[in-house]
Image 1 (cartoon, rainbow, N blue to C red):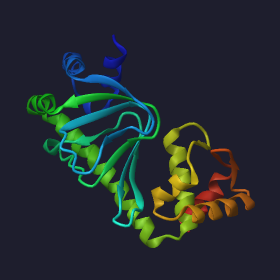
Image 2: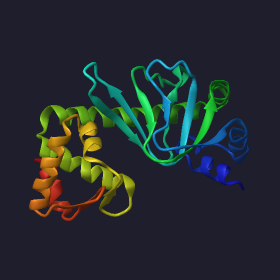
Image 3: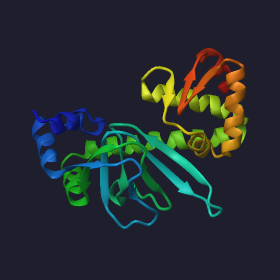
Image 4: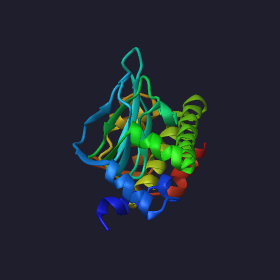
Length: 223
């Protein structure tokens, strides 16, 4: 079995499909490699394409009229994203950018439409995935409204550590990027992280942040 078919079988939205159906999707999708920083789409991009993230991470973000960046979501392997009104993926005013070197399965509109007509359970799983993402965005906006900056940063560090499933060392996140995620200024993030360092909650290295005391950091996040 090819690596691509094995990957498609592992994607949650396809878990109800037979091997025959997965092989058909394998024939309809194109496996592509993209470098870190690649823009998959920008606001009002007319493309009708869905992307299946096989490897790497992708950030979805918006830019305010004042030029401030707000990260809507960080997508991990197995996620879907793109521009396709057919499945409720209409991302006006949103950018999609590769955070790492990425491997992507590209899926065209006609093929998606054919599969959904034959297998409506795929559409339901896509909608469930998008609903979960919307809930995460709403939770982030709620934190921005009601929580202090230290609590938001502490919660973000724990969230990122949980998502990467690679211990408690975060790699490759700049202070500016963390600021973009929670909607604040880089200087504020730097000052807060230095306070966490003094309290021995984290250890800060070159492009690394190691969480030293998860329970205490969680208490800060909950405050």
